[in-house]
Length: 179
Image (cartoon, rainbow, N blue to C red; front, side, top):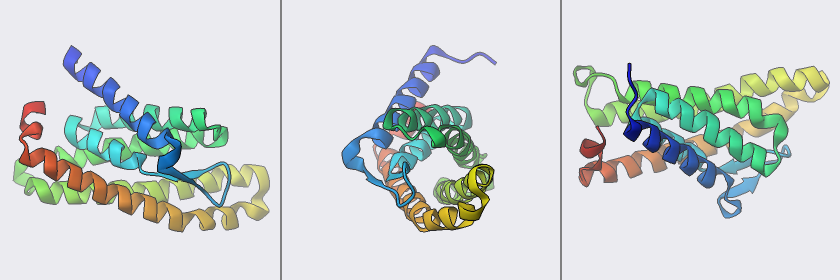
């Protein structure tokens, strides 16, 4: 399958957008478990996935968010972020781009962003638990549980922002022009 230059450029722009929204200091709050941080970059991942599909969502999520962690100095999170955010983008895009006979667009989009939020929480929980257990098993569960509320808020807020943004784009016919 040939990928168009237009799709490559739009995907690259979404990778950059995810990086910028995730990394900008005034858009994130330090996490109780350093060097993590709360941000709304997931909204950009969800928007990219809904606009451009699962492969672009995977690329925007994995590359854009991992680069932000790298630039922020959260080195231990880079591989975890790459995996979780990539899966988030892929799943959101896959659900949002199901055929029209599988439900109205707005329902698929609600399910897609909700799935994205769940992936954030579950993905970070599972991968961080695995990672922290390799370092210090005694602190692993406590450290990870302390991040769950923040990940819930981050995922939920990002899902709402993404859904509203996509609804606005839909009303302005941007969605039709991109597809």
